[in-house]
Image (cartoon, rainbow, N blue to C red; front, side, top):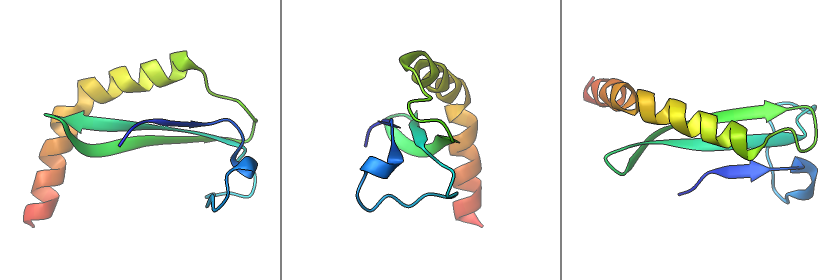
Length: 79
């Protein structure tokens, strides 16, 4: 229900990494009219790789693309 910044994934119990080299992760939700329609999920092999500025940039990208993402999701669900 909110963005996640994980400084060191090795400290998170039950963390499921896409790669054994992942050390930090940033997840930013994409919302359209209050509904979650997607997410950006960025991994790094460096502990503490992501900043508040990175999160803000992805939030801006999400705001700019949310309408299109919602439209694509609706088309996919209808098929």
